[in-house]
Amino acid sequence: MYIHDPVYRKIVVKIGTNVITTPSGELDQGILEQLTTQIARLRNQGVEVLLVSSGAVGAGRSILTLPNSYPPVARRQVLSSTGQIRLINTYSDLFERHGVLIAQILVTKSDFRDRQHYLNMRTCFTSLLQQGIIPVINENDAVSVTELMFTDNDELSGLIASMMHVDAHIILSHVDGVFDLSSSGGAQQIIREIDPDDQQFQRSIRPGKSEFGRGGMLTKCHIGQKLARFGITVHIANGRTPGILYDLLSGKPAGTKFLAQERTHGRKQWLAHSEGMEKGAVIINAGAEAALRSPTEANSLLPVGIEEVRGSFYKGDIIKICSMHGDAIGYGMARYSAEETRKLLGHHDQKPLIHYDYLYINSAHHDHERRNPEETL
Ligand SMILES: Nc1ncnc2c1ncn2[C@@H]1O[C@H](COP(=O)(O)OP(=O)(O)O)[C@@H](O)[C@H]1O
Ligand SMILES: N[C@@H](CCC(=O)OP(=O)(O)O)C(=O)O
Image 1 (tube, rainbow, N blue to C red):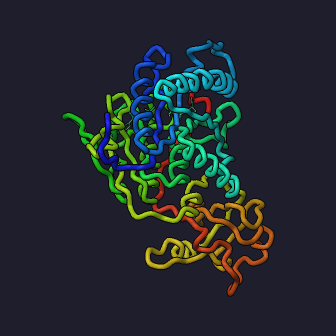
Image 2 (cartoon, rainbow, N blue to C red):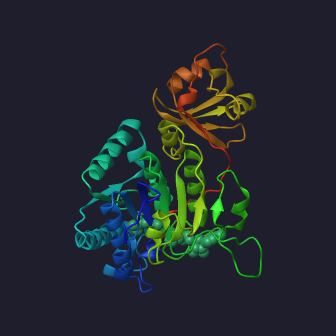
């Protein structure tokens, strides 16, 4: 299959556990063959592909059986670290048939925590792509535990998509896309296109996830909206549909598409993914919140609007910005330490704690489905 003029030149493809696992829990060779063939052909046509694949825990489950009484965190560690070998070997063998070399990159949330480390990772991915190698990425489940875990690989792949400034993030699930579940009765329709500013469609999503999946549809849509606002098109489609990647890269309608808005600055994209990585927090008053949320003005966060400083942070650290009600309204990079900020609380005529260029404000409150490790097995 040759695609005449692929609509995207650089993509992240995320494959969920349920896509590549048979009902009995084995890796599904047939589907893996289909997907690796499509990816290899796209790559051989010059499309740059970063692959984020789940399935380590699933593959581990097919290798060994642990007693039911086994502690959940240790279970995930044992299954993922044994299963990842099987998963990556399967990918390596299948891509080799097409003469494509892959690299394995396992990451944790803390790898994205400071800007220098983040940029080092970007250099790594860029260098691999330059060499024509496909990075196959997964969370390092053996060492990432509880609060420093990604919600799921949809979150991780979203972070990589924005870090690498890709044209499209393709989330391959075992369902055909986002269905409109808001009306009862009758055949359910797929929502073909979603404008990232439209909050209404979320009513059609049921919380919860499938067996073996970790995040669920709400997380996928949350990522879809966020990336589309940064200027990255996001597709949620069925990874089991034959030729699905060819269809998407040919511009044929398939699954659900989040329509990309104008591109935003890379630094703000990084800050937008800072949830859980902050070193401290500030509580700001209503006036400051209104200023930061202003749709017409680019305002920085000044000490005069800060009511309280929490935790201990230094200049250059990421901090969370909370409203008086305790809601996280955004993230930014601090220009003062926590101690210096405390001294400046409420003072006028001071330089901003967070300059506008280093500030990201959530555009809406999203329900976020965070699962604990016990629920992921
Ligand atoms: N509106 C919706 N459209 C499609 N699926 C939905 C919707 N709301 C909830 N879901 C559920 O989301 C699940 C897909 O998410 P997830 O379990 O994360 O899949 P995967 O493992 O394929 O990544 C489906 O099993 C489906 O039951
Ligand atoms: N890192 C885990 C996958 C976690 C995950 O997000 O799974 P999924 O919801 O199937 O994409 C694994 O490889 O088993």
